[in-house]
Amino acid sequence: MHYPPIKPVTRAEVVVLVLFVAGVFIAIGGFALWKASQLPPEKAEIIAGLNHYGGWSLGIGLAIAVIFFLVRRYLP
Image 1 (cartoon, rainbow, N blue to C red):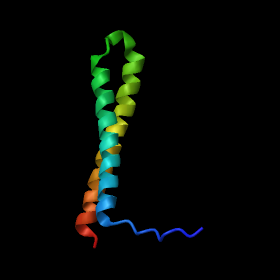
Image 2: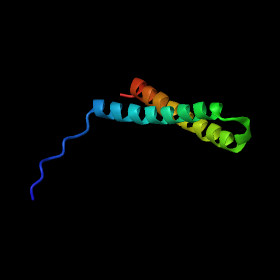
Image 3: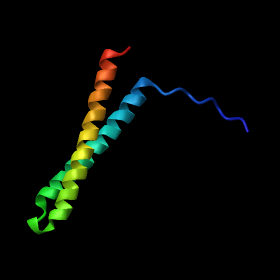
Image 4: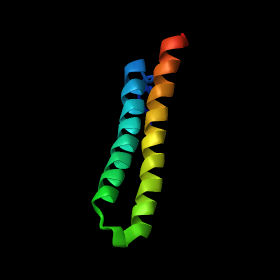
């Protein structure tokens, strides 16, 4: 079979993909922290887990966005 040539990825597609991934991490982290704040104190183990993983997810998403911005800004 003959397949058509694959077109290279454009810069705009990379921007959309990276910002989407960062947004998903930020949204999941924010949602986990929000749900942790709504739980009663009796569920301290679940709250601790949500705070831990929600904070990490939020931090990873923000780090992806900031690093991507810096790379786009200062590298050719």
